[in-house]
Length: 191
Ligand code: B4P
Image 1 (tube, rainbow, N blue to C red):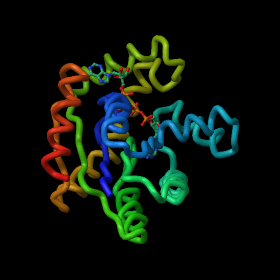
Image 2 (image 1 turned 135 degrees about the vertical axis):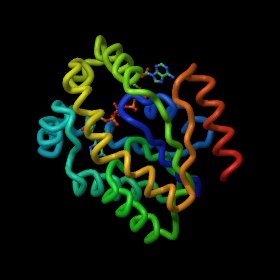
Image 3 (image 1 turned 90 degrees about the vertical axis):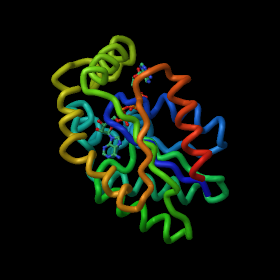
Image 4 (image 1 turned 120 degrees about the horizontal axis):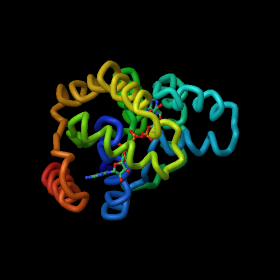
């Protein structure tokens, strides 16, 4: 199986590049952000709890997202592989993902990390906030909080995969098409 973690700070382009990658490599897209927003739209108890945190730019508890991913892995047993988009976001989530995949005789193939400077992230998210309807994109203070959450809880996940020799860093600034080409070259030479 080809299991790719697509990694980067908020607004790095994970969702944007995932859409193109699932089409090219026929992978199942698992975006914890999208799954949580679907729960919010459906008005579930989990969605209502998650919304309170997401609207403040705070990460949702590990056990919630790990449970969601476990269900999705079980529901897609016959796939070629997965794109994990926005997950894992903590070292505890990364450890749990390794355990879940090992129980299915599988593993993460590589982490693609999109590197983008903070100022570019802020301007992308504010731009999207003008019409996305996402409360977490509209307000500069909440965007700052998301970047702070990334630096304090998520950045360490890159070291977790680096220790396993699976970290591949890519410049996430430039045209969406050029970044996609670089990601594909990296996947094709490491799979
Ligand atoms: P996510 O939905 O994962 O969102 P994100 O980090 O904002 O977005 P992404 O990097 O995918 O950016 P995109 O491609 O859309 O998370 C939202 C919240 O959910 C989190 O804050 C947290 O509360 C919660 N959550 C999710 N997963 C969790 C987990 N595992 N654990 C705990 N909590 C979790 O790009 C952004 C914008 O940039 C778009 O408008 C796009 O068009 C633009 N863009 C993309 N590439 C570009 C480029 N090359 N040049 C210019 N603009 C570009």
